[in-house]
Image (cartoon, rainbow, N blue to C red; front, top):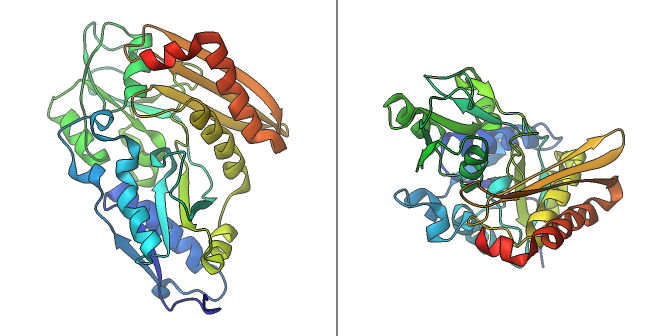
Length: 312
């Protein structure tokens, strides 16, 4: 039987990258602002994940996005930590039994940023320019707009990818504007990509907090710092991704927003080389967020057939 008393130290599990730590410390600061919880009572525990260790191959070849969460989730299930902080776009749609996403912080800028020393925009890159990215979605969406580009693998944290760009490994790269903002590096964005042309990844810009489903002490505190609108949007986006059986092998973009009291959902699936794409735009009541996300996926499946997703 669980004790009614919170442990003296609340332990937050996170990856060790500068961005992951910035996100964990934002959660720590928000929790410490609640009555009865001091910042000194909250510990940030760094956990090295498979995704951090494997840097020489694309994620799609070694197991997908779960590589950034499974060791942290194992620590959560074993009681080594009390909550986990993730970039929402790294969290698989199916969680281990006994865990749940209890809250999301207010969402940051969802757009992708274009960084380049040679051009102001993606469209202004020279013919045949080299674009560095490790994201199949960004690769496919860039090639959809600029099929002449040559895309090279760009693994590593934000700072590593920016360093590779400075070293001339590529003439441009694409990063989440939210990550740049959280790291105080927003000034390095050359321009921003319009979501009408370049849909973000499901969950981009949102920080997810994962807890044990039966740990109501921690869940209650975490839910008090959560943002309801972000949670609603993410429920639609994750329902969309789950219905498509999306993985790191399938370039998928999806974004839900709340406008004038209604939920607006935009989604897209692409062939890896950007040569083919299907898009969907659907809206409905906020209370039907997950239904809307699934309906958007069903529309794409009905239009393109399962073969499209197997090809992708």
